[in-house]
Image (cartoon, rainbow, N blue to C red; front, side, top):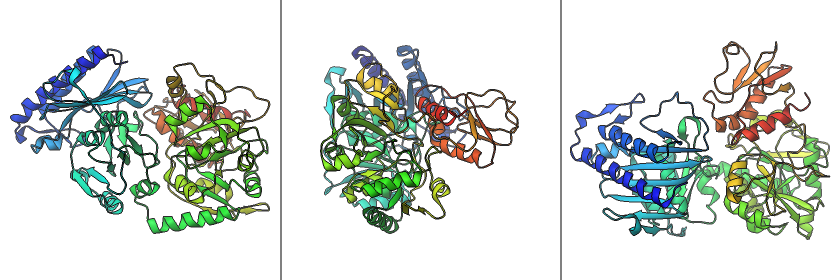
Length: 593
């Protein structure tokens, strides 16, 4: 996508932006400040640098949409494109206004909702940071492209932590996190320079507990990732782009490390730690007693049983009324543990290296040992994943035994993304003749909103058995090949393959355009005028954002079902990105019709 020749031209463009920003900085007068609709400050530098950047990138990449802070408005309809640019002409406008040197110019190119290129330029020093050919680079003022120097994160030493944050956005939550982590130093740095410090190994963590916009962090994220670090949500998932209103929630940017302590992400959400620890220890004890425990994951809430007990595993089937031939997913703390129970292939290693921990399940041959036999329930194949959610990871790390866990709902029904969904399905008794749900860990709503992607990795190329948040396009990109969809097998080797699944009580009709009397509507985007007066409606995303629709899908189905309607009609949803997974769930929910 970005050749060496284009890289040179992008750097030349960034230098022009630097010159323009520096010109305005030197003669800046606070009386010239304007304000946007959201009351944030706007300077002439913002406008002119934006014009230079947008014109230059449009000339180099005429077919790629550009989302810029200065061009964006809240009514923007994002097209869910494969590629798009995110531009912040002056990141750190407050620093610019206050004559601080830490303001920057940011360019980021996003592909399949993940950043693949980032450039950060600092006008005051003339320094440029960028990533290219899977490496992060630093270029000093007046140097040419060939003089760029490689930069890398340092391995984090948890006994000597160094953090940074912006004192302009200091909150009680952030202060609590800093106090909890107890770093040796905590620097005050504004703008995206923070990501450059991380990429150079000067610091280890940048926690953020207040909202940011995607153009604020995408360039830094891309550079940091190429330097060996990453930017993750409080669910442990890599931050994606093209979200609702291009708005980021809580995140943690980090340097090079194998495993971030679960407590760092749990505390980022500012949970009462004493109460949390009590819940966790009680859950571990109940699992050891062969009882069931509901716990949060990044996808949906799971109904967990300890993996070394046939009795506990059977109680999952009894509680859910799940068909005995429908396999369960094994959850392990890390890949090292997963390799004890599954025969990893080259394809599995490639995928899990990129997407573990996270919402990806791989199907592999079962290893020949007693615990593997128990976990796979005697099958020759095993479905296994390493979740990213810090609570799930904390539970697995302290239990030291894998957990089998399907979604925490009655079999064939709508999966749970909130605790109330679980209570609706299993309460108020939470027990039956052959099962006992003795503990529920509440950690708010699940980030993804649908189950993990399931991929058969026994062959040279993976086969997708269940679509999910790790999309077909993302997997195809890694292998540089077309990836097959679900195949017919003599037996079920993966959950999510039942033809009728994820179904509310009401009949579901998909790809609907005209109204059926007395039905409820699950809409997407701007519904037609003929539907706008419907009383029972749930819009998955008024702006047509597929991530928002994914997050709200099961809540929407449960909400409409609560009215007791006989029919739920669903508007068409684009078959692209995570929209393929959304359509898969809706197709199975509508199968009986």
